[in-house]
Amino acid sequence: MGLERSQGWRGWRLPLNLRLPRGSHPAPGPEAPGSDTSVVDCAVYRNGLREDRRLGYAQAYEEVRQITAAAHDPDAAFVWLGLLEPTEAAMADVARVFGLHELAVEDALTANHRAKIERYGDVAFFVLRTTGYVEHADFTETSEVVETGAVMMFIGPQFVITVRHGAPGALQPVRAALEAKRSRLALGPWAVAHAICDRLVDTYLDVSNLIEADVDLVEERVFGREAANPGIAQIYQLKRELMEFKRAVLPLQRPLAFLSEEKELFPKELRNYFRDVNDNLARIADRVAGLDDLLNSILQSRLAQVSIDQNNDMRKIAAWAAIAAMQTAIAGIYGMNFDNMPELHWRYSYAGVWVIMLAGGAGLYTLFRRSGWL
Image (cartoon, rainbow, N blue to C red; front, side, top):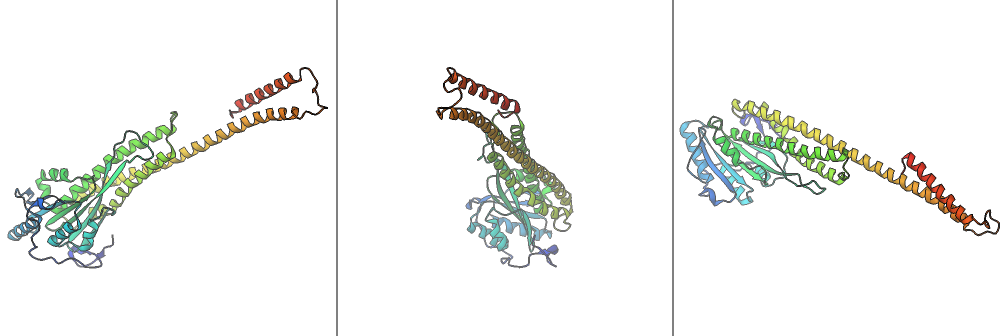
């Protein structure tokens, strides 16, 4: 993950320390949550309960700092800020308020990153890929099966910031479900990270089930007796969609494996929860690998079928060419009009030639039919 061991916060940091300045009193941000269109939700959570007041993220963060200072407990409260496809200017203001690293902020502006976890001082930057299944009436060579997006999380001691890109992976249900579990939410920002990971892995399972149904349908068509077998382009398109899903799922294994073994980054109560998510992801990864192997076998089988069909067509063409060649040979011989030819002046020579041509053609047709060429 590009991390180096150090004596910094719980032992991990990046090679370069290029963090933006982090003042004791952040400059005011938007005065209200709705002043920035990229802000989906912003809330202060104190001892597992959401504060009813609506605040801008700068005011919310300042309130959290005051609560934790008064309680002499850094885990007494935290702020959860949710962003949807923020602009560069909006993300720069969030980075200034929360003191985020400029490299992580740059990564958070685009959705084309692999799943990873990085540490910038006391802030962890966690990238996850989101997936969704695209419904389609019938699978064609241009059908889209999987759509992907990204969720980035900045997880600090007193805040968690989620940045979402793309349609799949809405986090409002995660927030609502987590707010109903006060004891879990009281564990702090990493409880939010776990809830999001758990939700996304459950989504991976749902999408993998639907993709498996598509693969089963293609398999039935390839090996079934239906007249219209799927084309190679259709199978290859499904394989491409599966590869897109695979690129979203498999890279998450390394970050989750790291979190499932981490002993100092978050409360020990969450360790088993991350381990459970990692186990579920491992099973999904095995399923994806199995589907990929099955699609490879289906593709090879379809290629073999096409080759066999082409050989059958060539045999049919060769058989009809042989029948036509015999007729052509007889007609060519008796069309030379030489004076000294057998049966040239015979009364029944014309009818006899027709009988020979038809009988020879019928005999060859029967022979090719019995051998399977026709």
